[in-house]
Image (cartoon, rainbow, N blue to C red; front, side):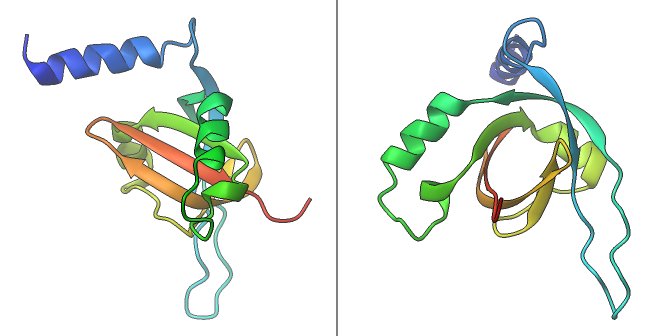
Length: 125
């Protein structure tokens, strides 16, 4: 078994829906183009781990208060392959994402080999 195989197996344990993973609806809103309104984006159900403890740690350890992490509202982990398969790419910082039909701005993206960590902030109420 190769190192990559071990990483994949570990990721499947981490994202296990019977342990800490849960299903959430994710969509990436399309940006308006050429003066036309944005088209609604499909909602994809993805197995995700929401991590409030890591969010609190990142907020308390934020050395750069302008990076947006200090006022983040949600941190989650997802399979990198799920984003590539469903959306064609990984969303970038300052773009928008819908998580369970609530719109968030992406404050931080950590792209590891097989796993993506998103830190999201929500403006307004």
